[in-house]
Image (cartoon, rainbow, N blue to C red; front, side, top):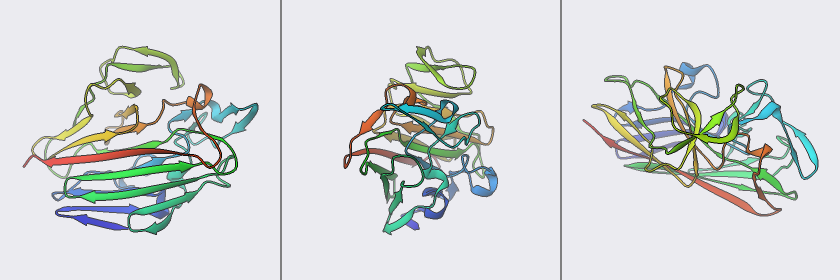
Length: 260
């Protein structure tokens, strides 16, 4: 699925997790490519659904029943099933994933992708089927640390606090002052939108309806700034729940400006 607007070109790959596989702005590829990553969790911009981030030890209890999830980041489950499952193309810029058979509650997820010369907006909707279900969703954009030319990316995340992580990478429930990076951490209370700047090339601003941002920049190849509707392991705390037939919606907007 290819989209164009002005000098911007986007490729969406339904077969590889319904992700934005390429985002070219003013001739610069901004996203890590599959061949560069070698790991489906580290390329493109993919949906995290029906959970985002880690779920401790891959299990959680919901309304009296314990459920097991695949351990994609042993010993934990991570990032849902959407990123490793083919989606169905249902129209121009529209994708659908039937969650039945991929996790215990069924349901559906859809994405709608809209491109303009100055922004890419993705809206995701998760709808429960015949069972109530917990849900945490978001996106995992993997931006290249360096473009084809110029300096390395500079990251600005104006957060007021960070969720403390324990030794296994799971938030403890406590918030702490923001330390110096690199990070693999969840933030909230942002004073402004996160930005990634490649000096002399492009600046990207991320906006979302999601309240939590996870930043992963420990890999020297990439910078990931991930909007989520809740913090990792929310399934083991107090997750959002959608009742049968109800939906939850989230939006990510990636805007840019040329610095050349």
